[in-house]
Structures are given as C-alpha cells and as structure tokens.
Image (cartoon, rainbow, N blue to C red; front, side):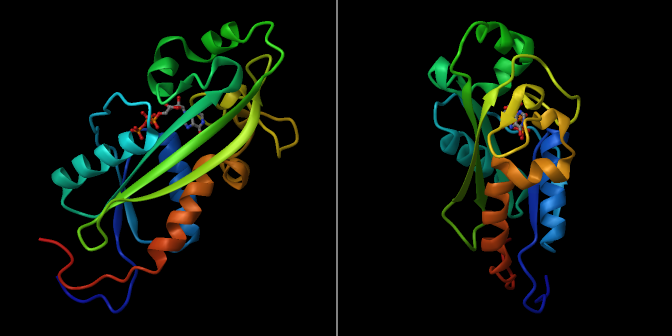
Amino acid sequence: MSRSGGRSLRFVVVTRNPGKAREFEKIFSECGLRFRVEPMETPEIQSEDLREVAEKSALYAYDVLREPVMVEDAGLFIEALNGFPGPFSSYVYKTIGVEGILKLMRGVEDRRARFISVIAFYSPITEPVKFFTGEVEGYISEEVRGSKGFGFDPIFVPAEGDGRTFGEMEVEEKNKLSHRARAARKFAEWISGIREVTPPYE
Ligand code: ITT
C-alpha cells in the first residue's frame, strides 16, 4: 500500500438498509470523503444501548473486511411509550410496522418522539471505537403520509420542519434535519482530519 499524500482515510459504510445508504452517500460525497457502501449483514446483539449495538457491529465488520468501517444503529423513541421501540426499532418495524405504531398511539395526545442515530467507527489506526450521535425531535403523525424515505419516515414529523413527515421529503430535505445527517456530519468532520498513513492495517 502506498502513501496517499495526505488524503483522508478511506472507509466502508456497512449497512443493508438502502435508505440509510442513500442518505450517507449524499452527505459523504458532498464532504468529498472516500468511501464505499458494503451491504453486509452484521449480527445485531440485543441491547438497550444503541452505542453497544453499533460498537459490536463495527468490530464484527472490521474482523470480516479488515478495512476501516462505520456502522450506524438508529431508533425511534416515542415519549408516551416510554421510549419504545427504541433499540428494537428494526424488529418492531418488521413485525407491527408503521400501522402497528399508529394503533398503539390511537387516542394518545402526547405524540412527541425522537430519532436517535449512533455511528460507530473502527480502524486500528484510530482505535478505540469512535462514536458520533445525532438526534431529531418531532412527533408521530395521526396517519401515514408520504412514500419517500424508509422505515418510520411516513409517520414522523420533525419539529423543525413545515409539518410534513420525513416520508414526504426528498432525501436532501431529510438530510437537513435528520438524526442520521447530524451524526454523519460530525463523523465527516472528524474523519476529514484523519490522514491515510502507510501501512494503515494488515
Ligand atoms: P442496518 O443495521 O443494516 O444498517 P437496519 O434497518 O437494521 O439496517 P437499524 O438497526 O439502525 O438499521 O434499524 C433501525 C430501524 O429504525 C430501521 O429499520 C427503521 O425501521 C427505523 N429507522 C431508523 N432510522 C430511521 C429513519 O431515518 N427513518 C425511518 N425509520 C428509521
């Protein structure tokens, strides 16, 4: 491997979620970062801590790929449901889906919710695992609105927006407000300052 003249560290975005990948790709390209997306499955441990889930996934992905890796774990935390589905968002989405959440929220006045994103990054030259977090506050809509985005986007209205759900926004608009974009920009700023050295890893 040759010295690459002070270029920022190349890394792999590990996700099997194409919606997430699209959002990261937009931000990282805008920042001029060098990366690729790998739709690799990482075993998700059951934990109430997004950080712990992301960390374990990042270390697993590094063991397999042997390249600098970033993994994100995100969740929707609904106030009136004591933070449910939170770290179990992926499973809850696959089982009861957005309709299931709307059912649980029927007649509930306090509809406040937030998305939280935790990025974990690992490479041997920057160890230990680094974390970057982002949050967006909003509320759960009364009905499904929009078909853009993914997951719970059609029922989440960001508080700083204009009343539309994330499901009614283009990726550029969602990226101005979202938990993921906030975590991604913090990560982008940090990794822009990490130079590739020779040889970074075996
Ligand atoms: P990877 O682990 O492969 O990245 P995943 O979809 O399993 O993909 P998470 O474990 O982070 O990712 O899952 C969190 C779930 O929370 C996700 O499947 C969605 O249902 C929901 N979610 C997270 N971020 C979201 C967002 O920006 N918009 C809508 N739903 C989101």
